[in-house]
Length: 472
Image 1 (cartoon, helix red, strand yellow):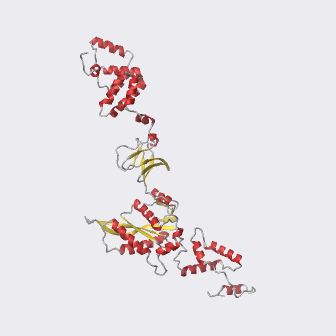
Image 2 (tube, one colour; image 1 turned 120 degrees about the vertical axis):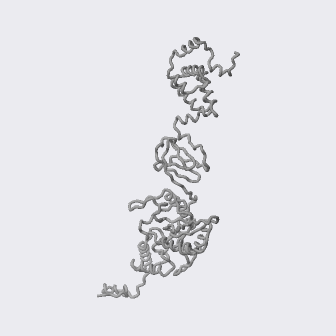
Image 3 (spheres, helix red, strand yellow; image 1 turned 135 degrees about the horizontal axis):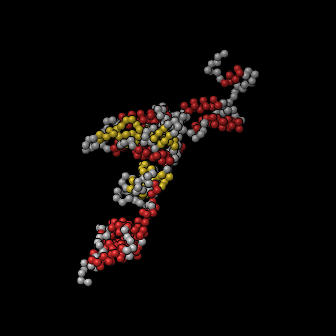
């Protein structure tokens, strides 16, 4: 037996259950379709869930509910003939799809006439169909990220999911097992509290609406302005912004309202709020720490803990801050210098102990040590500090002299310095170290007898210290 498509439920029930008494005037409770439509936009809500709730209300009110199939069919018919455009497949505030448009807009240098290209960034909210388009002078990472920021500001809210294509400025790798995002792109998503779900490779249907919006913007922006001539990227940006308002306020062909109306009435209230603090663009670099335990931002150098020498670190650069990360943990941060300086920015805590000690050295400290060591050592230190253009040039020699003192003792060092000053008025660390190496306990006696043997009673040091005055 074949049944026609026009058989009603009552007729079918009579055929299947002939002994059952069927009421001729069965009245079913009509669902609240606007309520169903509104609830469907909420996260996790399905037609099955709403049907169960509808049945419970009917039973509590003594009414007869529709079966699940009729319930869903009647809602879909209602949604089709009312103002709802599609909103069954796309929940409001759920997804923002982004991509670069294929077409470009030329602009020219007003002086040389050289031609440049402006690229179009396109973002679309699939539920309402509202779009955001911005012109950029390139498709590099900074423009890519800032266009997202401007899109969120234009919409006045943030979607829960962000669907980009697999371009390298945002996605490093997207395989069937894992998705590896660019570090800066991941930071942007964390700042706005959204989740990035890239479209599958070679599956353009994953972001089909943005593909159509790209073609739409190409027609209504790029093609519509083909006769205009621009002389700066700013002019292009301004013209694109004007055309964007025309597109979003253009009436639908088959439905009442426009994209902007659909967004304001049906989607905006479901968007996540914008963060209280503005997004700050950051650049990530990778570097290996050198022996000077310094890393560079391209202009200046900044210190990291010395025990990271030879290790690979990640550097996060913002306009005002330099941050250094090692194995995912932030090791240190510095205030970023706006201008290039020759002197690196170094924190004392990052230095090894011997370098910290060196920082505490100064001319007064060297002289204080020398006076405690001996008269001849004091004269040698004075020579080291006064020989160069600035005292700092003699610090290294003074430090080496202190190390020799620690190795050989004050008495030996003072004796060797005294002996050397009898020979030359320009002592050096090399000469002092050589004499100390060959030093013996009889050196002082030999020096005295040698002087008496050859009749030398006054050395070069004597004349130097007395300014060459021989009338004493």
